[in-house]
Amino acid sequence: MTVTHLNCGSFHPVGARGGRLLPQTLVAHCLLVERADGLLLVDTGFGAADVADPKRLGQPFRGLVRPVLDRDETAVAQVRALGHDPADVTDIVLTHLDLDHVGGIGDFPRARVHVYDAELEAALHPTLQERGRYRAAQWAHGPRWVPHHAHGDRWLGLEAVTALGDHVVMVPLAGHSRGHCGVAVARPGGGWLLHAGDSYFSAGEKEDPRTCPPGLRAFQSLTQVDSRLRHANQQRVRELYAARRDELTVFCAHDPAELAALAGAGTTRP
View 1 (cartoon, rainbow, N blue to C red):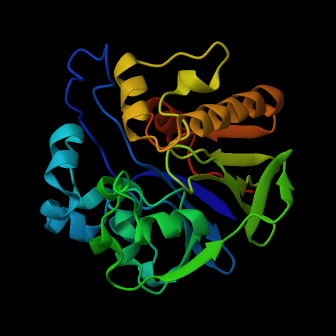
View 2 (view 1 turned 135 degrees about the horizontal axis):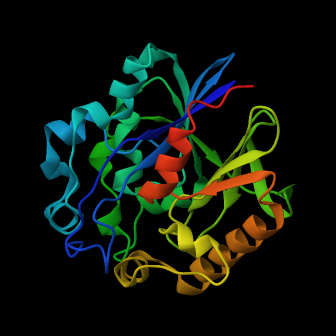
């Protein structure tokens, strides 16, 4: 098994000039996992259809976050560039269904799309508060949804559900969205990678004491559905990282420094 870290969407958010309030660039950190039984993606960033028709992302999102929308950054383009056939992507595991995480699923129409059932329910039947974060056009092709529900499994002391074999685990980390989760992937050679999604936005938030640029703190508060849950689950991630950092690599979806460090280390092999 090999794991490759990908950036499937760059952003230059409003107010980022100088980098004091916000980082000048954010990323969409995704994983490509090569397995004996097919390729697996963790999140997909933006898809080819988003690049071709940016209007489907909505003006408020585009105006605030200012996505680059580069076709070469799409997961499907990067899968091809790595020498793979996109049809070999058999499974996609999503941290959540926000439009900057799920846009690429339409580029892999035959893949099984794993998601927490609470998140799928939120996306398909959003409340008034939730409507701005989901874009039905991104799943208009009729994905092969595989909804998951936590039922007592544990992973490193946290509630979890095994999604694929014993090497891909979904960890509930709700708060940012209704069914947000982390995705843990067994690291070749031992230990784990934990894609913590949007449970935090800046690498300093997994440290104790935590730090975060004020603009990112405000953005997280603006987009959360449950403040208490988000903060409690971020604290769980922080405690897990402190206790298990020798065996656990933790990263979020949007921190460019985390992506650069992991991508710069090269493809992880057994």
